[in-house]
Each structure stands twice: as C-alpha cells, then as structure tokens.
Image (cartoon, each protein chain N blue to C red):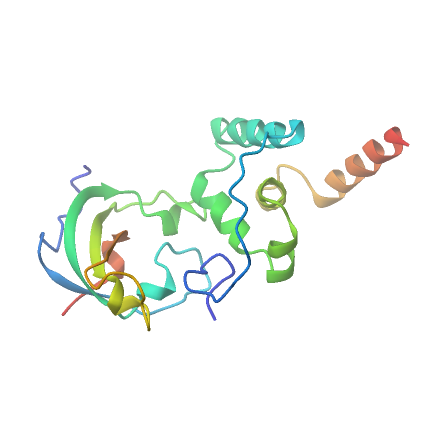
Amino acid sequence: MPKVHDRGGWPNDDPIDPDEHEMEEWERQVDALNGVLGDKGLKNTDQLRRAIESLDLKTYETLAYYEKWTAAMEMLLVEQGVMTKEEIDAKFDELKQAKL
Amino acid sequence: MASDQAAKFKIGDQVRIRVGVPPTHFRTPEYIQGKQGRIDTLWGAYPNPESLAYGGDGLPAQPLYQVEFAQTDLWRDYKGAANDKLLIDVYENWLENI
C-alpha cells in the first residue's frame, strides 16, 4: 500500500469543490512562518513534504491543508532540537487559557 | 545544470520505472512504477530530493527527465482518447534500461 500522499488512482467518487475561497488569517500566518523557517535554513520543501507524508492516514484525512503544514513544521522543529514538544504544548495551553 | 553526473538516457529512449515503495520520501508515484515510458525531455541535474528531505545536501545531483507514458498503459479501462499521454518528471535513480 503506497503512502498516504501517493494516491493517483485511488478509487474515490467524492465530489471536488472547485470554488475559490479567501485564505483565512491563520492560513496566511502559517504560510509566512513556513517562509521564515525556510529563510533561516530550518526546513526545505522536501523536508516539509516528507514530514506531511509521515502523518497517519486518519490525521492526513482530518487535517486541512495548512494544518498539515503546521503539523509538519512542528515535527521538523522538534526533530532538529529547535523546540521541544513540551514547549510547544505549553505555549498552546497558555494561548488557549488567554482566550477563555 | 550541475555537471557532476552525466545523463545516462537520451531523448527517445525507452525506460522502465523502478518498482519500490521505500519507507522514506520519494517522488515517483506508485501508479507509474513498473511501467514503460519514453524519455521526452532532459531538464538537467538537480540536488536529489530524496536526500534533501532528510537534511542532506542532495549531492551528487540527479538528472531529471520528463517521461512520456500512454495513459492506456497506466490505467485499466482507461476511458479517455486512445492517444492520451501522461508527461511526468522522474529522477534518473528511478529509471531502468529496457
């Protein structure tokens, strides 16, 4: 069975929604962060692809496009020792609390 | 074009795509693996994405070709025109002589 992204010819009758849509602010931020990490040499396109491909099928199918990028960037930063998962989770909790 | 690897194939050569689904990053979709195609274009040599994906330097650069396939060779019960083609970029390390 090929990896989750390698899906040419997978049978699927789901309709495709071709409508244009505006990017949301958080999506622009993810895109910008991706550019910054690239400029700083902390990731390249091939690494990002590799990280996205490593998501399990259920996660891959559940996450939106830029959520997959976010998961991949987190994976690459942790892998290179730039941040720890605990640090990222702690910041997430802090932001979540602040919003309540 | 980086000159550290001379292209092994020339335009018009028939090639077969290597079969393999390594547990690592690769750029050659499963649906063309094992299929026979024809070299249509040589784009040049580029750092190997299968090395770059793990933080490697991608060297030696891999020749990158555009390979042409008959759609009827790729898909069972293909319903499009009989002369429909697929053009797809494939790195040399995925190509075998016929």
